[in-house]
Length: 71
Image (cartoon, rainbow, N blue to C red; front, side):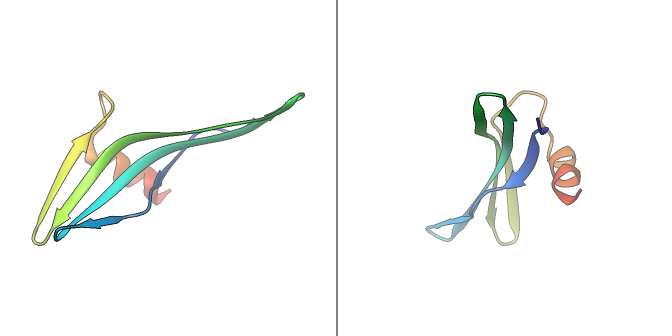
């Protein structure tokens, strides 16, 4: 069994904004098969020079996510 990982999703460009989803990805094996899930937990929205953070899960901060992604 593996533990969930925090990852960046594929950036999407829309009307001059870049939307970067942050995802929790889980994949594991059991005796009878494989299990997996991907859950969106936050969005970073960028339009130079500004960056907005939108949490999709309670208790999620930009600093924690950036440090989790860098591991």
